[in-house]
Length: 378
Image 1 (cartoon, rainbow, N blue to C red):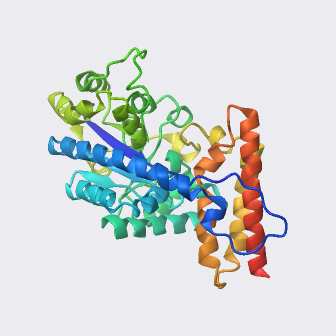
Image 2: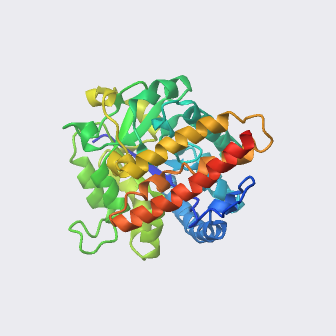
Image 3: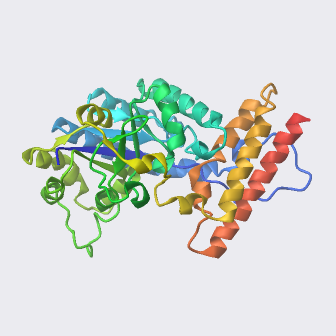
């Protein structure tokens, strides 16, 4: 292996309340009607302290030659406004010259699956403005929600100026290949190596795991033994917080990993650097398959999820018809957060009863919101 790209995904969703519409209730809904703001704020305050410590570790790693990219979700960036110190911490990482921030969807939605891609395009543009405002950067790399890949958005992203895409390296997409190259597409594509990503993200602290303890030299040896140009790791950053809190050796790992790779002749690159350095390899399934982290069946595989997605499309069309109304912007923001991927994923519970109860709750919220949109249009 010649190079490694590590992308950290940071996302804290706006959690919906358990909600039942009140008979005869009317008026334009505020965020607090559907979302548990106190719970969201409390969770953010707790997590932000841990993220600050992790950012300090990443900065130490950068000083030793490390390079990273960060996929900061729109809901997370909105919450960061509650803690200027956390914004400053990410700014410091960006100013190091060794950290790249990627583009994304404003509301962490699956809008790239909608029949009309205008909402998706608007989300991408709005997120770009958010990054410019908060971190002073314009993203070159795009990471769709939960590493969602669908071929139909590639040309649009290229026209919008992106030079790289990171997506899930799932089995149906790889079709026998290994995700260890830059792949040819509308824009060059890097695919996540699922197993090695989850070794760090999920298994690092498991003492029963056969790879425990995972030290930098061991992990670097695994990577060095692989044939290919570039290995892409995508890791849930908040999971590293859990390892850190559990008093594992994750801090030592982050500090020492760049040196362990360097000794073995492996570079750490940002995604935009990787796609400029290596020739792309053709992967035919990029033109025919869709994929998402944990599989499309977990996101839109059952009737409730499909129906919720169709309702979002219908309400979006109805909402676009009242753009001149004074409450349009408020309704649009609430609608954005009703599209978060967690809402769809949580309706595919291993516990059928729990999944059903969540679906009933979300459709209650969606029904009440649609009532508000229709009232506004009359």
